[in-house]
Image (cartoon, rainbow, N blue to C red; front, side, top):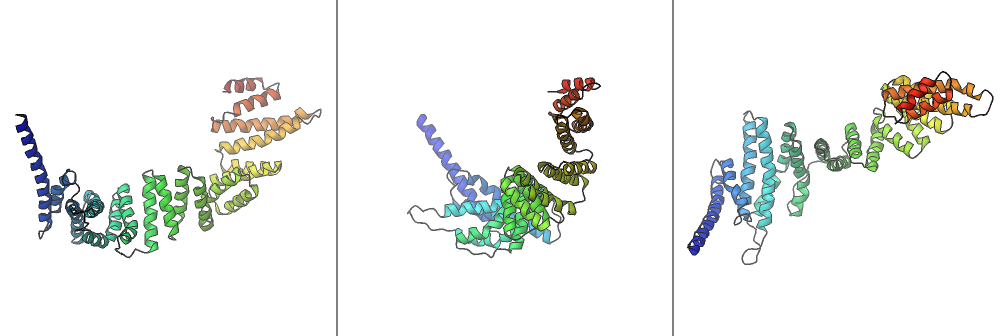
Length: 405
């Protein structure tokens, strides 16, 4: 009985294997007809791509590639005769084209394996190379279709095939003339946008860089390149985009200067920082950005011990942006530090002379804290100011002592 069971199982296994081989032949037959049903051919051959006995059969992968490519071509024919093609079909057929490339690559891999006599005799590879080369620009168009229907990962993948295909074909001794650098640059740029939108910052940086290398350029390339690098925590790449963006578009876009200014502040290169801020003020019309720039100039003046210059710039900063907690904090800080020097000068009237400045500093610290309560150092500073001012400020001192965290 057990032996009989094994015989049955063996027969079933052989039948399934035969069925898959027949399905491959059936797909080939469908594709050879005058009006092939590409969907039926693909449906027929797909199971064979996974079955143990046929998954390394180059013929199965070859037919899968031809069927998938046929679905793409059929859509193009429908469009050419004025038939309405809905977005769902555009998306599906775009992926059919991408799949065809993957199927053809697998077919070539298995087509290059030695036969039972140990010899390599490719049967499909030459035809595949010709088919893929002929459809070089189809991958660009598929990317455009997929981008338009907001399938950004699909668009990225189609364009990746398009941009790398000439080199891949050349490696197989098949030449296809690549599109111009200008055309490739634009595709790299849109690939980068797709990568950013799908949170692939590494790929976005790589594609923005490739776009730059082709000579393609626009302001957004450098702005988005900076942002992708920032999200990837790559300061050196962010600065590279900022420097070139500033050189090319700094006369109309201040964002590049702000990144460079921040870098100069970190390195305490105040001379370069001031030059960048002064230039940025001449081209910027946004009040909030002007506030940031005047705040930067205030910091620079303060670092040089120029109290009056720092005070003037910080005052301009709060005028241009009355809601900037940082500008109010910096204004308060510079007045507070100057007042402390007066108070600690040792003269008989030193505390009295310092009082107006301390009161003004307290006013601005309170304003900064009201705009941004996360400035946790402010309550302690205000408590110290009101405690120092003494009589008449006891309630204020108590209030800010309680607010200390």
